[in-house]
Length: 126
Image (cartoon, rainbow, N blue to C red; front, side, top):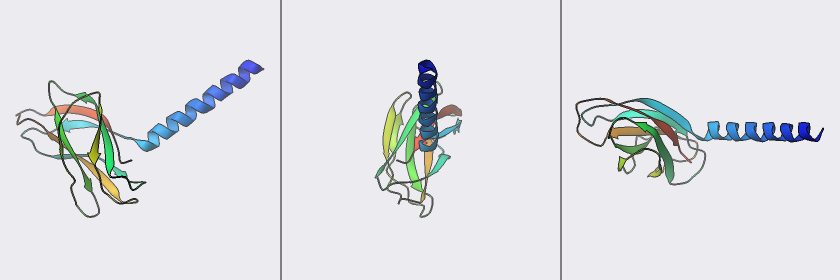
């Protein structure tokens, strides 16, 4: 009986954790364009008034690094670009989009290269 209660508690806690993570981050993946051409990768509605968003690359092809910035979808305002980001680290980027409006992630290859680069990761506005 006690083992059943403990197992049920673990399952409930595990389910709550997974649900929380899926609503707070937007996964993205695709190709980072050659020749330093920007590309939109993820869009998310901002739920608070904080001045930063977070991004983390889980995959970034070859020896590449990326430049990223947030953009307010409603106004078109682009915020300060952070340059030379790599894999496996969570970065804070400027995002002054108002709560309830949508923010879009813009990614550019940090180097002037002639090849496209596969990337993946997650983005969250708050």
